[in-house]
Length: 436
Ligand SMILES: NC(=O)C1=CN([C@@H]2O[C@H](COP(=O)(O)OP(=O)(O)OC[C@H]3O[C@@H](n4cnc5c(N)ncnc54)[C@H](OP(=O)(O)O)[C@@H]3O)[C@@H](O)[C@H]2O)C=CC1
Ligand SMILES: O=C(O)CCC(=O)C(=O)O
Image (cartoon, rainbow, N blue to C red; front, top):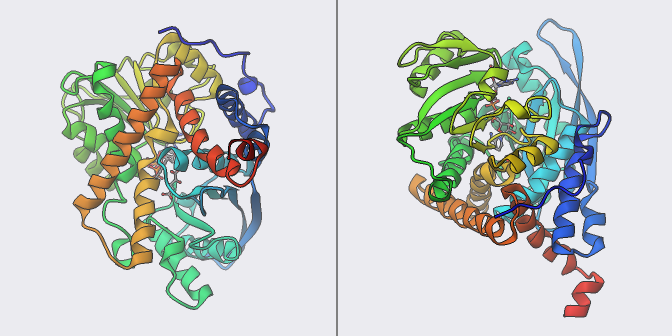
């Protein structure tokens, strides 16, 4: 099937164009495809509200430090806004708003009763003591307490935030509201109202999406090779699940560098090494292991490349050197729009973030449901539900890709947009009244 060329060279790689501007191009293209009412584009091109704050923290040495923080509620037409909080030195307003835009579409693709939100703090957590990290986590909630809530904006983990951080945040939120209020945050530890199955949910969702496409993509786990960038919550669990399925994990990385072994790695042994030494470098493989750079990892000749760290790892600068047949986007936004169009034209299959990593928020939804009902599910029920959602939505996106000649990303946006547009239009656009 011939795929339509992108209408114009994207503004995506032009310096000075924000990430949100780039994301808007994807939205514009999806709106054009569906001949969506202009009201919908007009609404979705802007975040509904974003709050900025400066968090002032007392450091262990007695000094005071300021950290910039944001929380964005991008769009809440389908329900309360939902999304993680990222702690990273490069967090910016533009990044938070773009991540919240992506959450809006991700929640729609997964058919959840949520809109999209996201938050972040500009901080290098590796420079903080556990006590400082706790003060920062609590200060974040204190700053945004009026903004969040179980029916307004629900927080979750993202890069460099985890169950412990979410427990501090949930505890602080409960103290502010004066009653146990776990429902405003998901990704909590089990003992604090968390759900079974959230820890590996993001990776498991991506694994199910990939498995669902084995046939059409001609992938056979016992023959396929995989390289994974990032060895945190998502990268590690993705490695474990793919390895258990028979895939050969030939390269892995973290922020300090990458390792390559054509004979493959056992992710458990690599994690044991990382837990002991703090880094992936030096971890044993099954054969001859060598150190490579994160850039080299992305360019390896593998069947499946899994970016599971930061956005904009594959851009116009390195697109021509990307050899993987399939890219499973477990990170948010790892492929720039220009590289996306270029790779799609070349025939690389990209399973887009808003589908591939939607397993995390899908199980976060279950945590929210369980907190509201007070009835807790066992792990197999959670996994079965996650599998059903991922299989259904992956098939729906694949069908649009095949029927409309779209890339999988375009198809996922069309799929999500239909649902969001339905909620916008149902509130009274001219198109809705004409049809009603
Ligand atoms: N957690 C979740 O449920 C979800 C996460 N995501 C997305 O998945 C991605 C990863 O998140 P998550 O696993 O939770 O984050 P974590 O903080 O658990 O792990 C991040 C990993 O990325 C590594 N890393 C950081 N910078 C780089 C770099 N420049 N090059 C290579 N590796 C790097 C870190 O290395 P080191 O260990 O050395 O610090 C760490 O191994 C993010 O894009 C996030 O938005 C999407 C949906 C849900
Ligand atoms: O679990 C959630 O609510 C959101 C996770 C997240 O931030 C993401 O999917 O990018």
